[in-house]
Image (cartoon, rainbow, N blue to C red; front, side, top):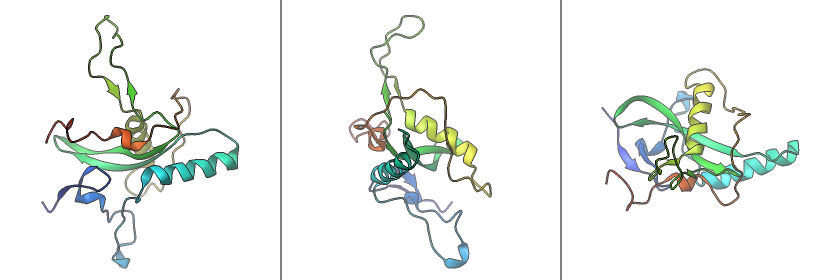
Length: 157
């Protein structure tokens, strides 16, 4: 199959270490790498865009990944800024009054997946998606790293 499953230095378990040859000119014999610090990159981009438009925004940098037990790729957040990336619902009640024990919503991943669907993966040429209407929590202390499980909590190691 020609695929390596590796743990990237950023903590992602990724096919081919996040090294990509799609959506770049193949005649140059180059590859596309992930940002060295996606959270820092997203924070710098967010700050610049916020200042330019005079708006308090959140920003997510996305990539796509295949999933080991499902067909197809899906977008996910590799970096985020000014957004509560994970919303912890543990201890709250569901609609039947049951106490939630494990529910943590990966908000940044959910938004990244929606954006990825709109951006497309082939020749759509939509590198940016503006999401309006989602009532998220601004956070200067949360980022994309919050989405990565520690080795001790990893379900598959």
